[in-house]
Image (tube, rainbow, N blue to C red):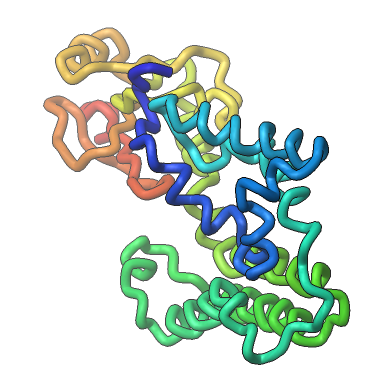
Length: 271
């Protein structure tokens, strides 16, 4: 908590996230006005919600390790504070700026389909047109609901719902390809008895589950690889760099998240 070994962020990290956390309700004049200190201390109910939300943000800001999802339990308090003073009028075209993230999703889907975002193509798992079309269609549906629904709160709620479902539908092929360890587990499972090792210092037994392994996976430092290979001549080594290992040859490359695992075997066994 004092000197985080992972996810270390500056003290203002959550303050920078607040505009996204209060969207779309807090982007309205009435919703933003509900967060004024005088309104937050107006009655016992709002004071309770304010202490719940603000206290958690301040406490977590003082902790060095930060992740956006750490504040998810505080979102109900934020919703209670924002939802009480929204105007009764329907939203129109002049309010489309409230839907900026949803419009951005529509434009991003079009740009990706047209090949204007090369970083996605470099990942090696290009997004198919059907997923981009579903994501854009979901965003368009949320935009139409924002303009057509008569209840202001319901209309605003349609925006984040459409954004999240649209992102999931649009990115699902990439997410499944990059965050599924099934192929890695199947690749190493036949070598369970002979020995499996990784050089990834952040390994936390993911392969043990996906490969249904019965033996532990060894985590090796660079200077321990040669000794492990002598003791496990039929074993396999997984590495996330392109460096060579003496006495071993790469036989398979499999992507995971934003990197690629290379499977190495003893040169004698591989031949």
